[in-house]
Structure formats: structure tokens, C-alpha cells
Image (cartoon, rainbow, N blue to C red; front, side, top):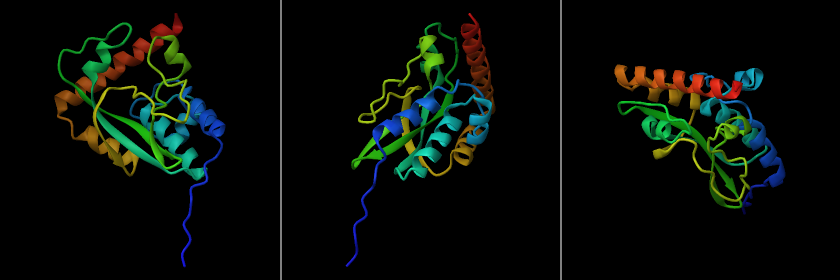
Length: 184
């Protein structure tokens, strides 16, 4: 007769400390999706932050899924404390996690931390490991992926050239927006 394995969840305090460690890595390095470089350079995008957090949670034995959602950068840019203008529809793909705790799946988004909170961006620094996080970017629809580096690179590569150029230009402006306000 087989045995039923149950998930042994580390104390929620451990999960929360890891979450905050990753969330508080300053946002940046868009296009760089390597978790090692995110930790080494202390700068990370949603992709590299969630790859790093995925690796930490799965190493602890927590069932974790890599997620991707399509978002509209105009919606995100318009909601910034000092909006960034985008004159045409521009898609991007936001990475986050789905985490299973006590037989319940939760959305986990560690994209922004203390630095970004000080700039007026929405964060999940108060996440309690018992509820869903709010997504940093307004996602229209989401799906599970197998590999952040491969899947995100493929999705971005499918964007038409003009939209890809607008996406790159937006993230360059957003990076300057973050730096300008962080230096003040």
C-alpha cells in the first residue's frame, strides 16, 4: 500500500524573510533574467527576482510555480506617481510565482521593495504568506511557465518590431524615472 506524501512547509517566517530579501533587491536590469547575477549585482527585474525566489522556495521543498502574465505598459505607466507617457499600446510579460501553502495556491509578487515603496510604487512588503499578493503590473491573463529565461525571451521576441522598440524605450525611461527619484 502506497503512502501519501504531504508537503512540509517551512515556518511562514522563513518564507517571509526570503520574500522580503528578494523584494528589497532594487528593481533594474530589465532583460537580465539570471538569478545569480540578480543576487550578485543587487539589481533585478521581475524575471530574475522571481527566478531567485523560485529557486529558494523549491530548495525548501515548497511547491512553487513560475507564472507569466501579459500586461499593457500604458496601464502601468499611467498609474505611476509621476506618470510616464506611452502614446501607443505596448505589451510586456510580467513574471511572478504561485506558491502552495496548506493545500492553497497563492499569488506571490516580489517585484518591488522598500526602495520602490519610497517612490510611491505599490509593493507587497506587508505580505502575510496567507493571502495573494497584488501584482506589480496589471496582468490581463496569466499562465504557468516552465523556464523564465526561455519563456520570457520567447514571448518578448514575438512582439512586432515597433512594439518591441516601444517596450525597450519604456523600460529605459522607467529606469531613469527610478534613478532620478532615488537620487533625490
